[in-house]
Image 1 (cartoon, rainbow, N blue to C red):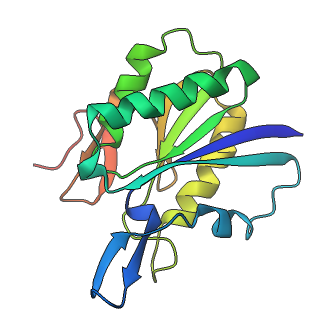
Image 2: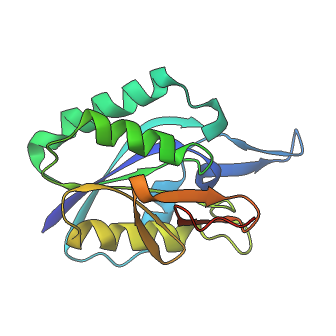
Amino acid sequence: MMVIYVVTTGGTIEKAYSEQKGTVANLDSKIDRYLRLLRLPDSGVRIVQLMNIDSLEMTDSGRVQILGTVKALLPEQAPIVITHGTDTMIQTGLYLQRALPELKVPIVLTGAMTPLGFEGSDGLQNLTESLFAVRILAPGVYVVMHGQLFPVDRVKKDHTLARFVPTGQESA
């Protein structure tokens, strides 16, 4: 059985609707509830709930926390999926890539444009694809979103298209 770590940091994928406030916010982690919906017979998925913030609140100290968690997991030589908000996902991925030049496992960052549980959410698809991708990828840092895989240093978020595209392919 392959162990895969899922490190949760928040972002849209984890947002929930607050009836009291009438807003969508990061309230509590819900990745574990959605992982239970998946059939993963040959995977031992272990969740590490690190933080639950909007990616626009991600700071260098948050990235240092993510790096520390990843470094603590690396001796197990298990692939890692990091759920993250899409607005600063690439910055975090590049930070990890620079800090971990000798990776021996793949690290995949993923998230969602629409929260898990909302109609039309892409969260479960992205999470499922990420769990598959880390099983077959070479060591390195990647972004997996919407059926696409990108090395973290060759991708941009296109806000107009609401998706990730290869560097140099953004809409005008």
